[in-house]
Length: 231
Image 1 (cartoon, helix red, strand yellow):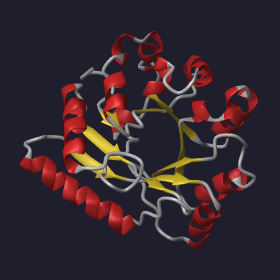
Image 2 (cartoon, helix red, strand yellow; image 1 turned 60 degrees about the vertical axis):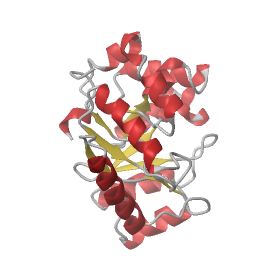
Image 3 (cartoon, rainbow, N blue to C red; image 1 turned 135 degrees about the vertical axis):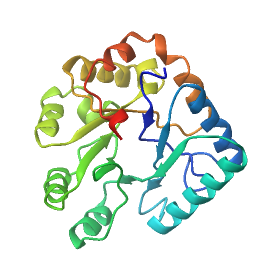
Image 4 (spheres, helix red, strand yellow; image 1 turned 180 degrees about the horizontal axis):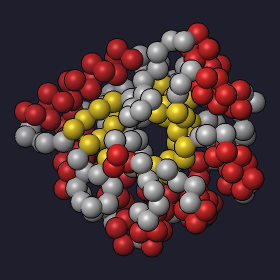
């Protein structure tokens, strides 16, 4: 896998911040397995959700620094950065409109997610506003949203609006649902995938990712002009 995906842009490996890993030891153990798979950089992205995980930029970056120190002490050699996975709600939209700085990765990429059932009524306005502010939006795991899974036209519309798509590696295994797996396959077939992400929360996720190399759709995804390794 060393010549495949070398940079992960979506994970929950900062301990104690969200529903991801709980301890530095757990994080280090999982990160060593990423190293073994040939990853050279992890951009970890804790949830920012106004009514659940009220993580701040300062808190995220401090925990990132603490984890970097822990990994050095454990002789685990990998580049570690932090951004966030923002949940699209009124608070995020307000922060965007007011120009409050948001955590990004690469060339101002902003990772966001939505509710899983219905399209947010502010989605298109959010996309437009983010573009005017200079952000490049990356929609986390579009294959998992019920309002997109069977609506190819809606997927294409988001692509045409400049939204980048990041699919989860584990979706290719059927981990979430057969519907998510089919939608991920469709996105790969259409060439509408810009990033692959682990969305790793725990050891069970990295265990699945360790088996993905032989997956036919993973191999097909690697033929796309993915942006991961340019980061």
